[in-house]
Image (cartoon, rainbow, N blue to C red; front, side, top):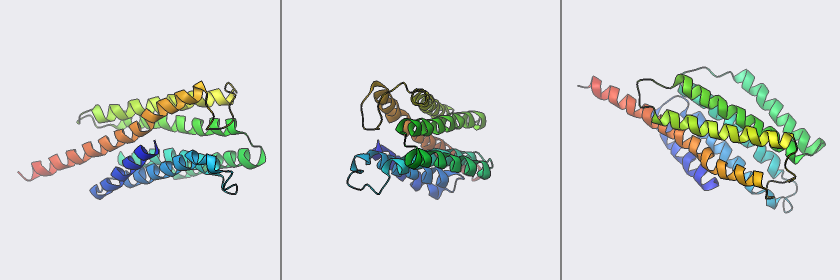
Length: 218
């Protein structure tokens, strides 16, 4: 998954030259998410570097990435970004994770918190794209993004409920369970899938601008 995320991020950064609003934000959001994935996959190194909280950093960046993706897409559709509300949400999110890491350590609660934020923000992205997609352009890229965002959102909301209710007995990301297998299987498709959808929307916008310029030059 990390390699796919890095490839998608590289393409997003290459599209910044098009000058479209929100693309830079989406690119940085994807980069932050990639770093979060890297920290989460490096958790087995924790005994080697006990002073570095791999899990806490990974969870924090993973949540921040989806928040910034939503912000970037609002910019992409020409909307304002409620930075104060997002800042408050981020501070509360980081505070909960930090308390559940240092003060009241609880892997399941942290996992549920991360999934709750990512699930709700993914659903918010789906609603955003649905409401503000251009009606005069081919719908495929926008509906693709919506489907991926809804799939990612439902998976995270389900996973959040599972761990808030204590329905899975594992206490580490590296441990295997049926729920973990479902999470990784769905996430392997929907996480890069949503980024791919964003790439397709950007490409569609660039094609639309090119068509307008060509029409003016006639």
